[in-house]
Image 1 (tube, rainbow, N blue to C red):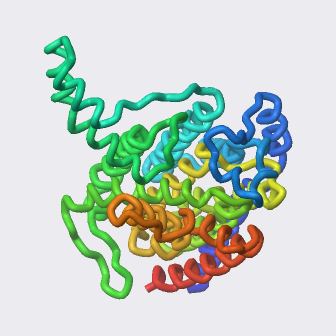
Image 2 (cartoon, one colour):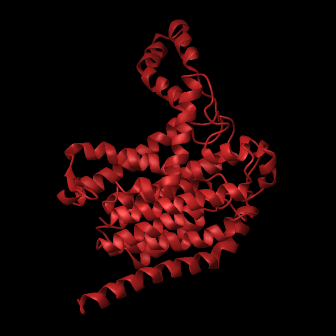
Image 3 (cartoon, rainbow, N blue to C red):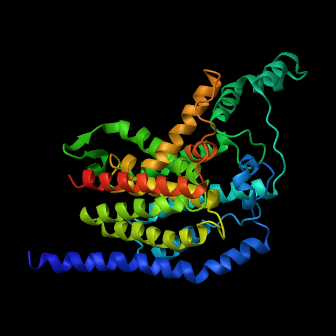
Length: 377
């Protein structure tokens, strides 16, 4: 015991040191990022953003977006130079960068891209009947399932006409999830094919693990993306989430993963400092999708999938309200919430932005503590 304790303390000291280093490194270049985003006009604009129509949010126009680059770049650089582990950290960083690239593309298309037209299902059916070219008609019939899918998934997104469309996001997120499957199921070994269930032990679900991994990566990335709607909200909740995951990784002996999660938490402290109202910048899809993907794969790789709904509680709650709202509107013909996700519903009920954020922080922190307690069993 006397030999074991100093080793554990040294590893914990290293992990905390990485969090501090990431915080300071982010602080050093945050002003440069803000200046860069303003210089190139990467700022929030009213076009296509219906939330700016709310009285409480009109002052958010012209705020730089893509501030999530502060965390994404800092975590990637520090991990590459100081925590690169061919077994554990390189694929999580790859998934984070794939998801962040998708988010960056979406952010830039929303700002600088034109309106994108989509053919409706009824238009497609009409063309199948009347198009002059029989080859075109055959092609439309062959691609009809894809057209139906594209139109069906729009119920889970806004009626956007710019940026990356819902079906395109889902397709690329599926690819990121597939990378996670390849790594966890085939590369890490047979041990990672079993799910650890607290209070019970390991549970084998064989091949069912593969679709579960894809769903977890996709849902978590979108959940963090959905929650990035108020100054300080997503960043303030991601700090204890990644901090908890760092602690659970350390307890389980995954030091490289613990360092990676601590690095993310440390950088998020600086990001949140600049994002608290009035925000100097906002996360953007580049940050929310990237960090959501990183959170999912880190939880999966450290066998904390069962704990993830607790340590990511408020993110999942926000995403579920969007699903409920979509089902209510398109199946039952009525809204369940005044506006989804949850933070906009509370805002329209009269809660101030500060009250909404702080209470969501408090609830989320309580659930993170419960998740850590469960994860230790």
